[in-house]
Length: 224
Length: 55
Length: 252
Image 1 (cartoon, rainbow over the protein chains, first blue to last red):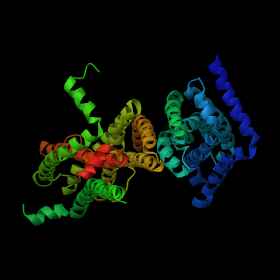
Image 2: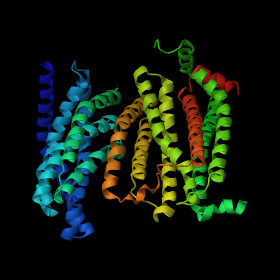
Image 3: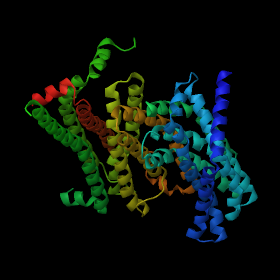
Image 4: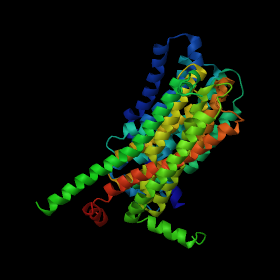
C-alpha cells in the first residue's frame, strides 16, 4: 500500500509541476501541428496524395514530437537533485519511474491524441481511418514514452544528449511506426485491422512490464 | 578458364570487385587501427614515464 | 557454477585478470590469424574460382560469399556484445565490459559491409542501388543501433560508467532486434512485390554452399582477431596507471 501511495504521489507531483509551467506543455502539440502543416506545403496539396500519405505523416510527426518532449522527463529532477532522492527511496525504483513516465505521457502524449482529429481533417482523412488513428495513438504513444524513457535515462547526465538521444531512441520506435501507420492505412482502405491493433496492444503490455527495469538501471548509472 | 575471364566476372566485374575491395579495406582498417592506436599510446606513455623519472 | 569443469572455470578466472589476458591474447592472435588466412584463401578460391556461375544471376552472385557471412556476423556480434555487456553489468568484470565495447566497432563494420555489398549486388539485379528490401532495411536499422552504442560510449567520459550504459543499451537492443526484424519483414511483404526475393534461394548447390560456410567460419575468426586487437588497446589505455602496464612499457 505504501508503494501505491508513493506511486500516486509521484504522478500527482509531476502533474502539478507540469501545470505550473503550462506554456511548456504546449510545445509538443505546437510542434506536432506545425510539422504536419509543413507536409502539404512541401509535397503539394492534392487531396488524393495527402490522403494516401496522411497516416505516415501523422505518425512520423507524432514520433518526433514524442522524442522531443522526452528531454523533460528527468531533466529538471536531475538538475535539482530530486532524482537522487527518488533513487534512495525504499520502494522499487522501476515502479516509481513508471509513475513518472505515466505522468509524462499524460502531459505530452495525451494532448497529441486530442489534436489528432484536427490534423486528420487537415489531411482529408475518413472517419473510419480517424477512429483507428486515435486507437493506434492511444496504444502507441505510451510505448514511445516507455521506450524513450530508457534513452533519456541513459543520456540525462550528458551535457549534449539531444542528438545521441535521437540515435538511441528512433530505431527502437520502428515497430510502432510500422504497425500503427499501416493500421491507419488499411482502415482508410476499408480493410480489417484487428491484427495490427492487437500487436500494438502486445507491444504496450511488453513495454509496460519491461521498459522500467532498464530505465531504472540506467538512471542509477547516470546519477552515480 | 583464363585470367581475363576470371577478372571479367561475366560482365559483373565492377560490382563483384568493388564489393570485395570495400570489404577488404574495411576489415583491414578495423584490425590495423587499434594496433596503430596502441603503438602510439605506448610511445606517449613511455615518454611520460621518462619525464617523470628524470624531470 | 558446479556444471562448469574445473579447468574451464580456472581458465576464465585467469582470463579476467588484465595482464594475463593481455599476454595470452598476444600469443593467441598469430595462431588465429594463420587459421583465418587459410580459411579465407580456401573460401575465396572455392567461391570465386571453383563454384559455377549462377544460371540466373551469372557471376554477380559471387558477392554472396561476403554479403551473407557479413549479414550473419552483424547479428551474431550484437548478441555477443549484449551477453558480454550483461556479464560485465552483473559481475562487474572489467574484461567483459571491454569485450562488449570492442565488439561494437567490428559489428558496425560487418553491418556496413553487408549494406554496401547488398547494394552493389542489388544494382545489377534490381536496376537501382537501393531497394527497401526487408534484409537491407533491417540491416540499416541495425547499423543505427550499433552507431547508437558507439556514440553513447564516446559521449560519456568515465569509461566504467560508459560501459554500463552501453551494456544496458545493448541488452535493450537485443530484445528489440527480433521485434524490429519481424516488423520490417511484415512491412516488406505488404509493400513490395515478390521480385525482391531473388536474393535468397531455397536450394543452393553444394559446390556453391561449402565456400559460403567456409567464409562464415573465416569471418568468425576475423571477428575474434579484430575484437581482441581493439580490446588490448582499450585495456592498456584504461589500465595506464597500473603496475603491469608500467612493467610492460619498461620491458620494451
